[in-house]
Length: 179
Image 1 (cartoon, helix red, strand yellow):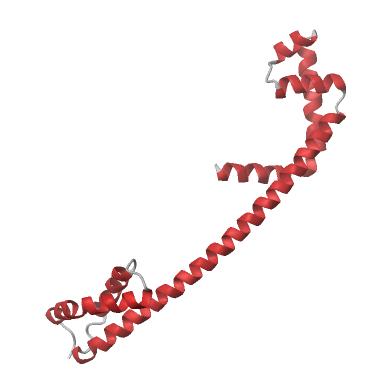
Image 2 (image 1 turned 30 degrees about the horizontal axis):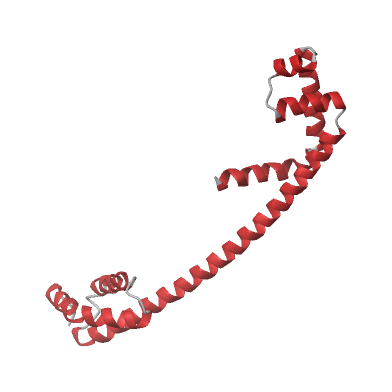
């Protein structure tokens, strides 16, 4: 005979506390027990036409045990995935740090290769944050000369850093993501 709604309620009331304790003994925690029992009783309701009242206790204990074991297995998979992800992130951060250092060294090297006037204009503009007008006034040159020197410096840096373009973009994207 199949399980009807009244019998289902009686089974729930009769076995819930026992199954709760049984789940706790397997999981050694109460955190996920209610979810596991809810899943078990939902499956029982879905299969109520196939489960006989005489075998319902065995069905419930087996179903709860399987749900608990699946939960434990899933937690293990999740923990392994987390460890793997952390290891990849650490490796990626070390790689990014290495690339950033290499890129910084290359930029410093290129800046040292700039002609003196060009380097001075670049430094005042980019490092000190002065406007072209302020740089021109401080150096006693025209604004057009400042613009030409900045163009020359940026072109020189761009050409010197062309091989680092992809690394630079990836580093920039990684920093944006971590914000």
